[in-house]
Length: 161
Image 1 (cartoon, rainbow, N blue to C red):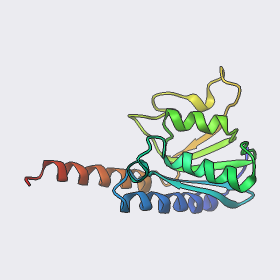
Image 2: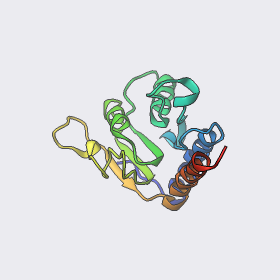
Image 3: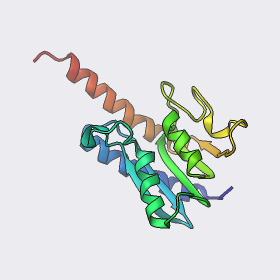
Image 4: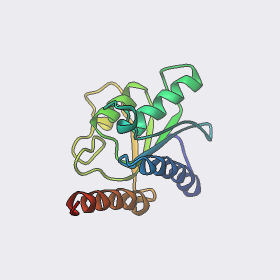
């Protein structure tokens, strides 16, 4: 397992939060992700499903794609993925397929979580690749972005036109 200080974890999660803000500015579900190798960010991503009209354009998929290109390999060994919200089932599968050994996320995803809440794909012993998972880094900040987004969306939906 790769070891980060609490300050490093906070720094990289703040970078993931910046990515989530990009989604928020585009009225996308605000989830952000960065992938770190040797102390450097090698992949960034934010939700862009609406913008790109592609169901798979989740933050983790974008970050994995960029990191694959940067290292010139589909395997992202010795990397850590930081994401603001627990990865969904699809993203958890992609993390495993990319051989990312460590995931650190901010807040749980009670409705779609694939890394502990609903499913536990990343640590399932039946699969050939397991991932070390840490949760709760800047949890309140990560959850607040999502809560504000959905609260605003509900108000817009319920307001008279």
